[in-house]
Image (cartoon, rainbow, N blue to C red; front, side, top):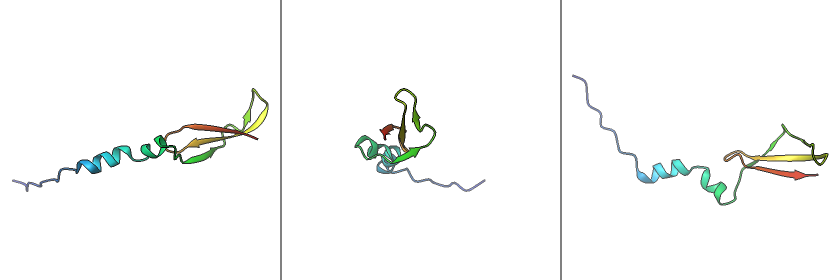
Length: 65
């Protein structure tokens, strides 16, 4: 017969930390903006734009030049 290995129960605090990792920052307005180079020209207004996309929650922010 094999050996029985007992596993530790995960701490409740650690589980909630892992679940909320990266989400709580964006909810409070601390996004991790990165430039999205796929769309650099706005067709409707005919201007160059810079599209920023949050790496954690994929929210989009557009800045016209």
